[in-house]
Length: 397
Ligand code: SF4
Image 1 (cartoon, protein in one colour):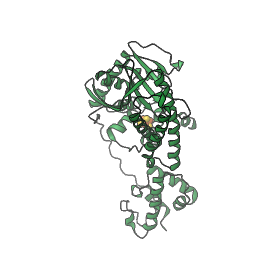
Image 2 (cartoon, rainbow, N blue to C red; image 1 turned 120 degrees about the horizontal axis):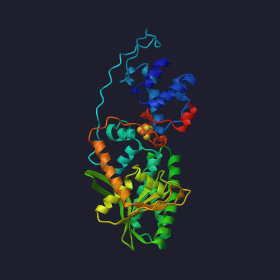
Image 3 (cartoon, rainbow, N blue to C red; image 1 turned 30 degrees about the horizontal axis):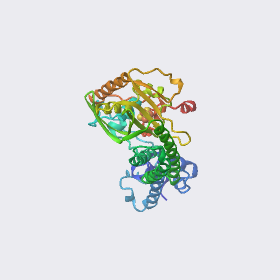
Image 4 (cartoon, rainbow, N blue to C red; image 1 turned 60 degrees about the vertical axis):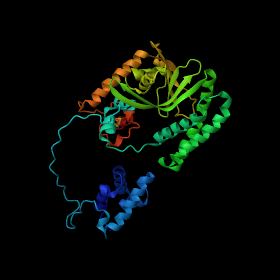
């Protein structure tokens, strides 16, 4: 029987094929259940399907290893039999730290979401846009968002001019569009139960979306003139690209509304969203505004449609674009408000400034955010030693 220390060492080596966080957790469990084989056999860890397969594949190789060490071809050689495994570790001489070098953005185009990432956390931007160090495999929330966007894009291919008289047809159609869009992502969700829960959530939310759409069409008829509309524009000398979820044209005035679907958390009031634009934490709608104005549209409204919560009515956050914004209080909680053209202009200038900083090669440090909220869904959490502690973690120390 292979020695427990050797088995653990193989488990923690890259040759095991087991993700390092899973291997570390298994090693801890092994101490409590009488060894690694027991820990694997008893399935004491609740693992995602991929991780579980990797652990079982490792166990199989471990069985074969005694007779055939080539099953772990990349493993470091084991110590000779005479060497006690618990012998004191000889520390290697540490190498000098490599001198730091400035980094710059490598992509030929910028996007509002890249600038949003930088505004959220410079370290996140560094991980995602310069070193590509950690693969973002997506999450249930991100697959929900992608599938919902696809469903709405398909739905509005048919319903370009939402008519209250077609409400029943719209309800049937969106049901089948959601089902089809989510079926295309079935394998992305970790379990069948998770998939089913997300489909049900989307179906309930989609029905609420139709309720809102019908009410909006009754108030002021409109035509959808763009879905996933490509937006490309130079902003202060830098190329930007993006995709506008939906572009509506008011039938009476000809003005357009830029619509962005949001399947994650968003500002809870128009004043709160405007504040995010003013403090340079959100560049998405400002960029779309300038991109469409450059195309000759008169953009009258910027709108975020919340599609996260199946238990609440769809209540968009809408900002009317005006020469000078009325200063609604953030505490009013009103979903509608105004934003000044000067606010959007300041955002445009700031976009240029950030592009210059990110591309001129002067950046040598990418500090982690001080806001633990920004880390909640960050794909780089495991790799990020400097992330701020959550209030719960602080309390536990
Ligand atoms: S975990 Fe937090 S601090 Fe680290 S990169 Fe992500 S957002 Fe930034």
